[in-house]
Amino acid sequence: MPTTLVWFRDDLRLTDNPALTWAAERGDVVGVVVDETTSRPLGRAATWWRDHSIAELSERVPLTRAAGDPREIIPKMASELGAEVVWNRRYHSTEIDAAVKDACGARSFPGFLLTEPWEMRTGSGMPYRVFTPFYKAVQAHLAAHPPSVLPAPALEGQSRIDVPTYPAWADTLAEHNTPGELAALDRFHAFLDGLADGAHYSNNDLTPGATSGLSAHLRFGELSPGYVWAETVALAEAHPAAAADAYAFLRQLVWRDFAWHRFYHLPDLHLHNVRSQFDAFDWAWSEHADPMAHPYAFARPEMDGTAEHLGQLAAWQRGETGIPLVDAGMRELWLTGTMHNRVRMVVGSWLTKNLGIHWRHGEEWFWDTLVDADVASNPFNWQWVAGSGDDAAPYFRIFNPITQQEKFDPLGKYVTKWRPAALLPGYPEPMVDVKESRKVALAAYEDIKGVSGPQVG
Ligand SMILES: Cc1cc2nc3c(=O)[nH]c(=O)nc-3n(C[C@H](O)[C@H](O)[C@H](O)COP(=O)(O)OP(=O)(O)OC[C@H]3O[C@@H](n4cnc5c(N)ncnc54)[C@H](O)[C@@H]3O)c2cc1C
Image (cartoon, rainbow, N blue to C red; front, side):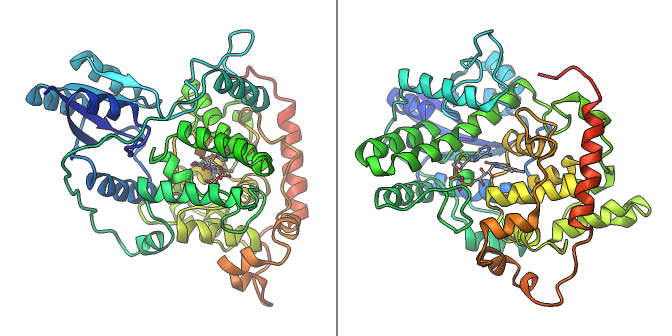
């Protein structure tokens, strides 16, 4: 029987895994995951998720774990096993994959996105930079080429890769999250069952369960987006009353493709403004506040002399800004490794617009603390919030966190859950005045409008 080496990356699943199915149909399967040193090491919360997901996968797939450079590890393993190499494509670190392919002739499959970045082009042959036409084009593409779902192959052997010991901060992550394909499938099907039974999907509803909660599962490929698409479309067809909510959910899933397509064309999305005019914007920035460079540290003002913004950044990170919705969101993030999308936008707007702090500081903090942090969606959304990205929130859209709370958390349930003190008398006042800081931000964004510059992309 020929042996195939399956290099698992962000596809930690059996169902609808094209590379794995191809390998299983061919003969014996040996799986490998590699802890790589990439230009952007995973943040700590995402590392926690990945470790648990790998452990879960190893109970169902013969899997080895290696650490180092895949350009050495994969060809060496392939030659020792006399195996062909396969994987599902990724859209970062592509130079590494190209080198492995050169060395041992690997076969690659799609499976991480609904559409390949090179498949979607505007009428003039350019990548899309605006979401709505992109969404329509993806819908048309998937109507013409509906995703076909591959069942999980039957595999023999398991391996039991254990999870390393984590510091205490990970305990609360474990209370709120169950990584792995089995949990992903359960969660997705519970979500679909809910829609079929009349529950509503709304990404403006802060109640737990109003959205799918699938982002980290999708991030690590425990679910394939094609599978999510196909099952959700089938549900909409079987339950017409649920169709509007089902398609609203799928529209969000297409944002994920959009972020990844933009990243594919702009691989330094987390470092540079997409719209280069914003290079002239006077955001507060400090090299010393990078949480990855200072493990387990919040920003510390003493690292940068008397920089006021570092104190503000630390208060934002800790959920101590004096703004109840922002503080609740930042506590939710710290405790659970996730945060509702609406609140992500509000905390992002507060940091970049009212506090005038560079979006990169927010992006880095999210990178380290989100279990769903990824190299495309995170910087893409931060640039969207800050106004420097593609199809971004317009410069004049500065969320008022007080009215956002009145609108989206009118009974204070969300804030009560994550920052109960914020609704009690004696809670600290906001660190900057909401209206005054909005005026200052508007003036700064007005200035940038006058700066002309080529748009990157
Ligand atoms: C500042 C900021 C940073 C973000 N960083 C990330 C990140 O690192 N990783 C990440 O997966 N999402 C990120 N998001 C997007 C979004 O907040 C999360 O995907 C969402 O909260 C996940 O909840 P859900 O799974 O219940 O989503 P649902 O509403 O159920 O949506 C279904 C799926 O669609 C995708 N999706 C939804 N909204 C977006 C979006 N705006 N951009 C890209 N994909 C989306 C996710 O995969 C999600 O699981 C960020 C948003 C903001 C505003």
